[in-house]
Image (cartoon, rainbow, N blue to C red; front, side):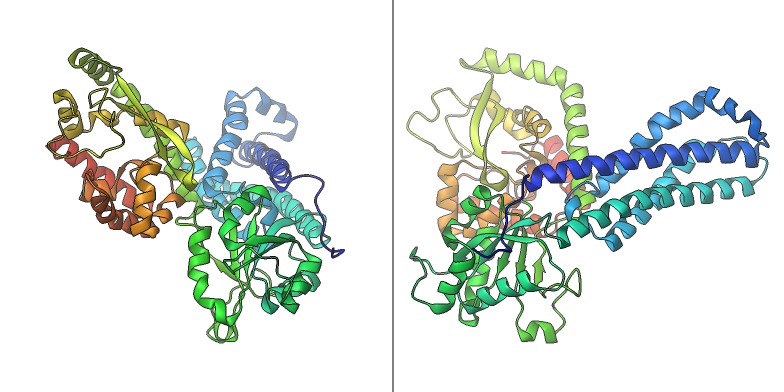
Length: 493
């Protein structure tokens, strides 16, 4: 085993959590200090309070309200920005950009929310307060952050912190990539759990000389077909694809296999053509050149905003629609024998099963002969169930799924594994949808509606894939507006 290959005493997830907590602590401290200094500045500079009377500040209720609420507001902004995710991979330049952006936005909001209605003699006082708060808050926050980031970067370079990595490839390029990463001047933190072969046969690579050399330094873990299980088993954070020129055509298939693996970072070795055309972008010029595949569909702040609105709208819906919820439950119970709610296992984010809840729209023995999709004249649907489907009343309990985090308000309609197996035989790109959470409504649901056959599911899939490629907060709002229109017009089916 190569002496550079090592295991960390604590898991990357645990270390990441501890480091994130330190960032949170110092961000709170910075916000409290900045607020205190701003209060002193305004009292002394703008209200001519004498220095020996500064004790009066601590009797001011506005000071204490600010010392509690202002740091919480900053934490909310930083969380929306994604400042506490992947803190072990932060760079000092990126930290500067993130802190500067958040400070500009936060100070503007804070200024208009808390300071604009203060009694100040002239506008010069406002400008001074704004500039003072910006300079002090940014200075303190970035100072604490850059110290922590520098310490983390130092530990990565000294091999005290690393990122579990899986190498895809087994020939000469993979072996050379491993050597380049292990022997580079500035260590990038890759701890190789092992490598997998692109070959479909699960034979230990002993015959090929380069494969044999790679197997002497890192373990051989199997073929690319088992990559998802290996990522989960070894807590892989980064995958590096290093295949030969005659294996290039398999890259798309490898990337499809890696879809649904969460936040795993995917990198690929470039060829000379990529470098000449300027396609290679690296985080540091001292590291080996690798192309990073962007698997994020939206910016981090958009994911945070999407989740925030999911929670907010779900709470509002469950509260405001509670009378409708109760009346619907009573009618369901009175119009047909059986339970009020219908719970069924569906497949969601990253292919994980979850229980989806709906108001029951069918008779209790509807699937006594096995799974079957509903159709327009389906005799299994109760009379009231048909009405519920038209106005989407049966979907109301799914807001509970949204609160739990197994669904989103806008996504794609989740299916049972029984039908997914049939869909992917015809349309394997369906698996791309598992990169996001399923939703109560979707672009496919708006444009196509319920599907009554696997063929129709495949037809509806193109609309959901279109949403996937254009996913944004704006797109979600448009789909919600269309969905509300369908509900009020009763065009559901």
